[in-house]
Image 1 (cartoon, rainbow, N blue to C red):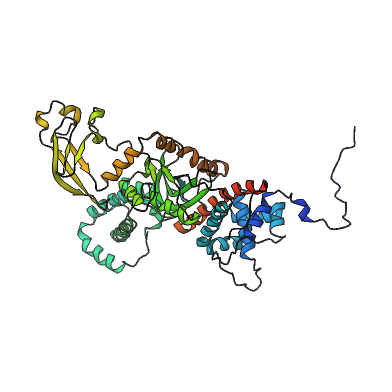
Image 2: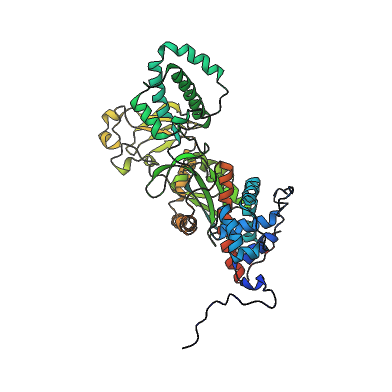
Length: 499
């Protein structure tokens, strides 16, 4: 049996070893270094930090390399990056045996949040230059990512209103005093709830058990605080607010569809190599107003429009289809399951799309030849346009009235200003080629989200506030693109020249 090999801790090197030899030539850390060195970080807007006495002045280029490699290898914590710069050979090599502390790394991210978006754009430009963007078909989609908050520290308009109702019942005799106090305290900071109420469970317990233990003055102070909260709900245009991250919103997401405070992360992905060509985060709980802006984002980053963009039913909106058509975007959006259907339906033959619109006479004709005439126009607060309503007046004599609608006043049809563009979209989707393009959507964009959430383990934001999570999403999407570009670089098929 050959002699076992053990570590010889007394061994001395005649010549000092080179860390260059300890990083393989095909290691991704070498590609990250080459990528960052091909950029002009000052032109991307990164702020030059002024050196403080006694504090190392690390360059933006060095700190950007460390952050990008960290995200490439699933290290997203500044403290973990600090440890890795001392213990992980690739980062020791990349940093040139410099060891920035976590505060330095965190300040770099905080001070350059808006510039990180430009780094993501450079990955897209590099992909375009190396013919990795096909422009034939792109898919847009969104995913909810949980905010860095606890649901316990949250406010809900319904809870606040119930508590105010209880307060008003016990404070009828001092309402005038409350109004005077509100005027004096109108400049109080937002979310000015007493500390004992800044917890969801405690607030609900108070609503349930009453306010008997509170003095009149405590009740007056609480009433003023609750009014301030209601004003904040109005200004933020929401019914749910987190005390920890006021810009996050309560959204349904995940496989179990539970509601969590989250942000809506949007991406548009090209079909050829599944590179992300557009990335953005919003507070919107739905996707249906992001279609056009994401196509515009792709055009800004790549320099040209794709031949076709596909999206799921969550992006369906007549208003968005109209805007996209006006800008020359060719889009295919899965029609909502309710489009063209009556909520009282019993038969497919009486779906809305079976009714013909007579434009000269401004009326509809049903499949049986009966006429639906204009009745009125209605406006809704959540829409920036009016909807015209058409009603059947001869429904009492109709033999199919129960099959068509259960409305006791007769079948009614709504017509928006975007009805024509919706019809055009419906007609386009009857084409077999377009159906095939729509079916490709989920195999283009959804694997990217799967990679981000499962492989990279990214299911919760590390930062708070819309600007910060936008920067983190740009870094995440940049790391996804860098992985694709790295594979191309390994095959000697990548030109690292972005300009």
